Length: 568
Ligand code: GLY
Image (cartoon, rainbow, N blue to C red):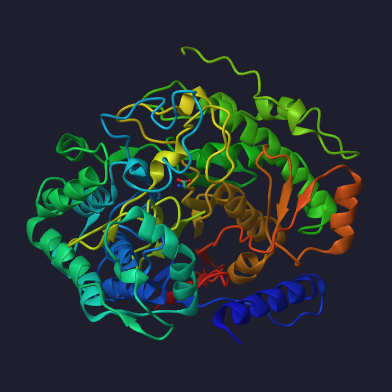
């Protein structure tokens, strides 16, 4: 059996067992993930989780581990781990202080509103997705240096060296890696003018060495942040982008800054949920959905039953309609954040919800808020022995981003420009329809759905979680919060649960295939919900840590991938 099929079987078995385990009064044992006494990393690759954990064993804190984990993922998870992309970090210090770092990519200075449209105002196929014009100014290296300078405790060389060694000595390819390389092979060839290492004849079990990436990381170790934003690495990147017709220049690299931002915190019953604020829609959208369902007694409904799905879908429909209209980079547009997560506004928004039948998305526009002025990413969660927590989602946007792989420097560049509304009203890679607030402009950050999240219960750290999955990130994260805080699932049970998603447009409920109860699905259909159960769909890949009642940590590593929890 292939690893993927094995994982799928484990998922299906754990899902079907779940109903029994949770609802049987006599059930003796819970399906728990990896348990650790004081520190843990959960990420998309065991190598990265191990590297981050080792840093904490050497006395490093969660921020040191973040730097090491992020760089390790850039080596062994090129699908989404990166130095040519960007991300967001939400943190909670041991004393309860919370904050967030935005190292999201930016539009180059030469970018303009209609750059992806032809003379007839039609979208030029693939221009925002594949190749040099899809690339936003990368933020990851600025992000890790910002984190290191503010919170790092071990020497930077100690934090970067494991990733250098991993690139130099190589990592073992999984079946998922090979499938994904094969799947993207054509695009690797279209985007590049040479054969990239992932286009070689490779099979599962082979060791893949990335010497160019190792040298790039060594230069960054020795020369620091400026190596990427002006040194030889920056030059290699710009030369290649310009050769391929891209618009990024040295001025873009020199101007790039990661920004510390206030995260968004909202309450749900006696829980405080902190997630990423703009330019991510994650925190606002999740806040809208959770506050919309808060007045309902959700525990009356079994998880993933028809009523449970219906309630959450209707809240999602309304929140994503608002997302499409109101949200964009708050450095460029005014967004009425507080109003959008106000409980009275959300009560009014849900006032036309009826249990009898589906609301049509065509009947749901954005809410009436007065503006005063004007699925591929990766997540990792860390808790350190000192009690600090770090939640990070980082991305190239699509798988391997723009597929542009910088020669002699050995890394992929993002295709984050597709997260702008390239033509208001036209869906992006994830089918999300956007409006003016998220139109392209020079130096603007494109709207994201990434939702690195931290949950507290009565002010105490409870969960660290997040997910990849573009627009499905928000709904995946919130379903996991609800699984744990409303249904008392273990972290692993929660992560294993089937997931569903609705995003206003297209007007359909996406279900992970063949894992939802037929009765619930047919009841939903009878009420007018259009159901989509495409075979290939994976909704999120949640990597999470739960602080158990006894203070131990439980990792929830998503069986939908090669994800792994490592702790001590
Ligand atoms: N590129 C996926 C996101 O930022 O949401």
